[in-house]
Image (cartoon, rainbow, N blue to C red; front, top):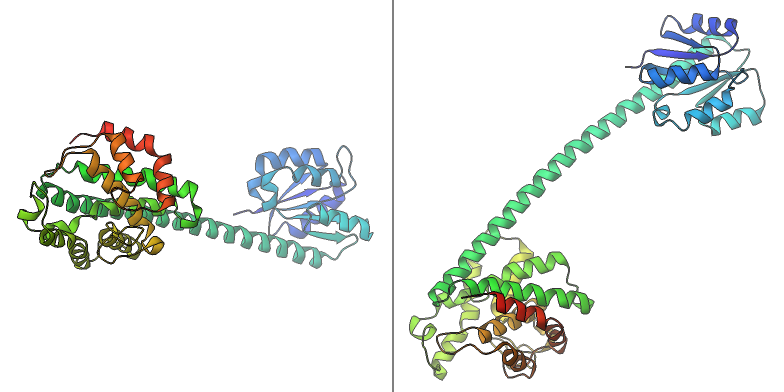
Length: 363
């Protein structure tokens, strides 16, 4: 609580008069000139409730004091009142422009000075209290925001763990080690970042890419419902068996529909899009819905390429692994189905990163 006033005037009688008017409400401090006032304020500014400043003084006049105070950050918390015999509008305007909050003309009425001083002090104290409340509320809001961010991150991590576990269940049943999921996520990230950089019309962002990468782990969740005789068959599937295998896209979505309170709407939509449409092809010859072109969500288009590439360069129960250059050519030439020209452009740009990841990973 600021309880002191500082009277700055080179005339002793003027200082004493103001001290007499205000001394019963405030602890009065005095300075004979501007230089002395600044020295005092640099040490005790936190105690000063108001400064009463004369303009005409030796060594440093009131204008110079106002200019010096404007360079001190703490001065904005102390009201400065000018008390002067200069009654010109020009002088008063100049003082107000330099930061003074009021201008009292000499000669003055004692009651008027007391009232105007009290008004200035009250206003600034209220302002200081309000600023402190705002700061406190800001701190509390920041703490709440940080807590929410921490909780959101924990939820995201829990969601990712759950999804990875579900994806790994499918892979282990498919006699895979679970590395397929990690590799598909890696390829998905590489390709999605290339799409974001080269084709802004798809409106991918870093946040959306994180969702797509994580959701890609569930692209084959529906294979849980495929019989072992078909899923683990070492040879070529019959037409009927292949039709059964194709149902893993729709059955996967049925499974996802029964999972509640694990992800938000955006995440759930990405999981469904990838699960249902990652076997669609750009020319409409994919399944299960025969979508064409950009009817296929970009998330599914990206994961589709990632999934096909990984299946080609790694051994499966029904095939040997293809060399990386052969796998690349098979995809870009349409041997594995038709993909979007834009996605293929990004795939070719990212070829080196794909092959690097394929070389680093092991089953």
